[in-house]
Length: 122
Image (cartoon, rainbow, N blue to C red; front, top):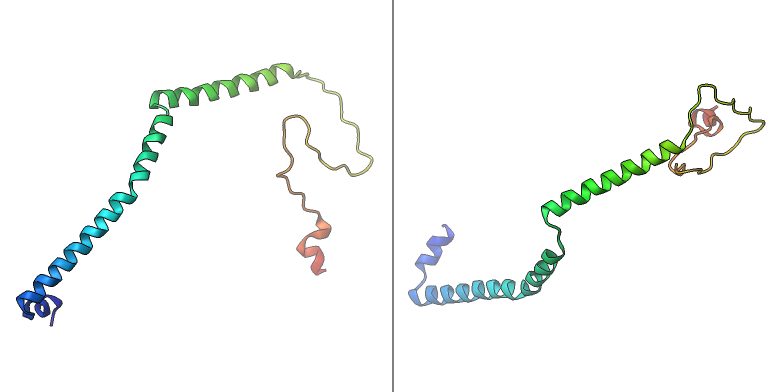
């Protein structure tokens, strides 16, 4: 038997009681959600005041792009390029890389043959 048929077979007084209980429970849930969202609405309005307009956001993006381009072009204009660069001295012993200038070497991983898996299996 389906759930609705079982409810329909109950007396009218018990069906009314069930309807009132379910209505009050639903109302309580809606009121709880509504009251708990008061702080969220205030926070949204506060964030809305801090937000940039779309035009200001796009101008910020282009401003950042143009400042980076001008910085890179300034760094390139300070560099001298020659057709006959001086040869680098031959290294006498192994040298470790260090961060120089504006380049960060921290993400470079050097794998030596002596520590590779194939060398360990031999």
